[in-house]
Length: 71
Image 1: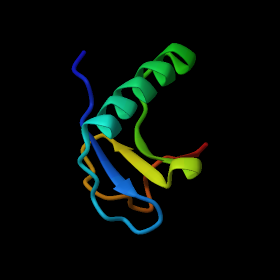
Image 2: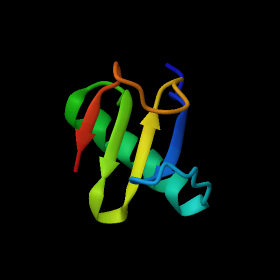
Image 3: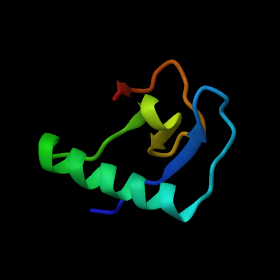
């Protein structure tokens, strides 16, 4: 199985964020999600305390049909 793509944005400003630390966070988030839910995260996932949104899958920005998970 291939790893889904992810994009990271500031929340709620929606500016793209491209730091190594946030990409490491996204990979750790994915690993934790898989261990709990036995599948890959999809759609957008907000981590309020960090003001960050991680979008998993092929959608570049969140849309109305995406999955929303709020930490």
